[in-house]
Image 1 (cartoon, rainbow, N blue to C red):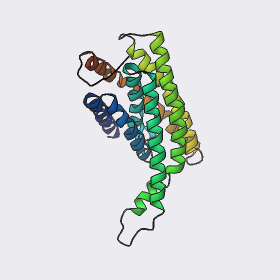
Image 2 (cartoon, one colour):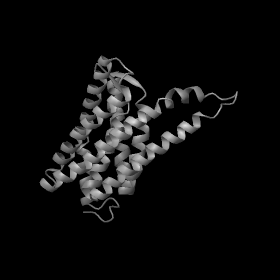
Image 3 (tube, rainbow, N blue to C red):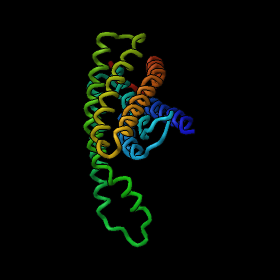
Image 4 (tube, rainbow, N blue to C red):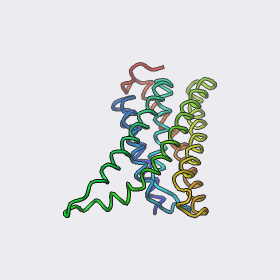
Length: 232
């Protein structure tokens, strides 16, 4: 049943990012990047079994941040893609600091959520550190790699190539760094290995399945259906 929910969540995430871009152009993507990073870092605290493997949630929504920067790199240039990476980084730092401050308050006798917040966000510093390191390294590589493949293989027909070639390697960098920093010593090695493998495979599937989305965006841009502003 988790597999069905996973594909359902995939479609919902694609629908959100496409809607944001259709309504607000690059501004919509600048909105979506911090949303995806914050939600992913909350969802990653939950473990599930999917396709027979131990996995954490958050893989889908996090992977869409790579789609966002790829769209920005394709239609607005590398500088705008790097700006989105910076916005995502800032949003994660801000969320981590603000939630840690929220936890230091003594709850009132009528409070009913402090324990739940503590269970989720007490893990946040280590997860946030792992996410910040992995996020910066993988996303900076993704923007660079997308621009590299765009310069080598420009044009509509090779859009799938630069979208997938840049993201697949970037996702590997992200997975290795994140799982090592966030969960080393937390889970047994066998479970940690399963989490690493499943995380990368699920992100890889998202990267492949998001290819029709970037071609749909290409079609919208060509037909003038979205507010693109100045684009390359």
